[in-house]
Picture 1: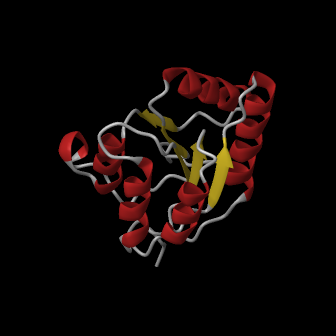
Picture 2 (picture 1 turned 90 degrees about the vertical axis):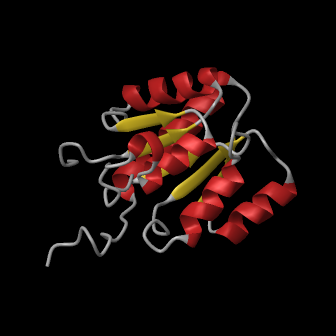
Length: 154
């Protein structure tokens, strides 16, 4: 059972239809209780690093998983991934790229930057719903990540 206020899913998606469908599927599986939806890469970086409108946020509180689109406004998903995986404080955040891009170079670069999983969004509703449901179950319920040094109990 997650602790109260424990962030489970950070969804970074600019396509409102994809975001709404993702949230609806996760809610149906009771996995969206602690979900934050951000609409662009700059907002994602501000949230993760506690800057801009998120200054003062406890940046030691990491999501169980970040679902990250690649084609984002302001700062693209690869740059968000690069920033998160290059910073020791945030490197352990599991990042799943969920994108419509089947470009080999996007996939290769994502893995070179340290992505934990790369999922091409299925086009049809049923397949998309199933993929989101399975991702949510795995990353929120089954996967375990180490506590960050700042949040680990002494």
